[in-house]
Image (cartoon, rainbow, N blue to C red; front, side, top):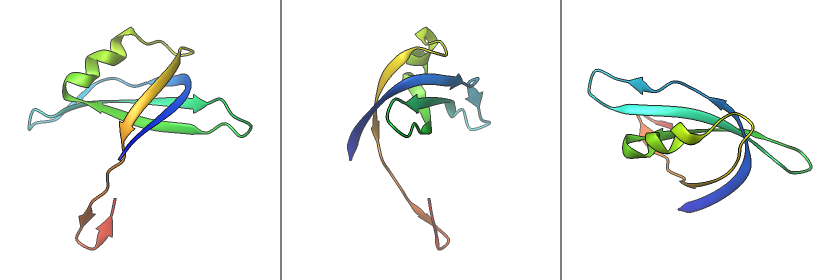
Length: 76
C-alpha cells in the first residue's frame, strides 16, 4: 500500500547501523493541517542518502509504504 503525506521536517535523527549491517535513519515531520500531527518515518538502505539534503523546517512530501507483521501473537 503506497501513501503520501506532506509536512515540515521537525527532527532528523542520526543514522543507525546494526551488527547485521542493516542501516536506518529516522525522521519526524509535522503535518500542516487544522490539527497538526507529528509522524515518525524511517528510511532504510539506499533511501538514507535522500535525507542528507534535508534540514529541520524544510517542507517535504513523503511517499511511503505501510506494512505490518505478526510476531509471537503481537502485531506491529
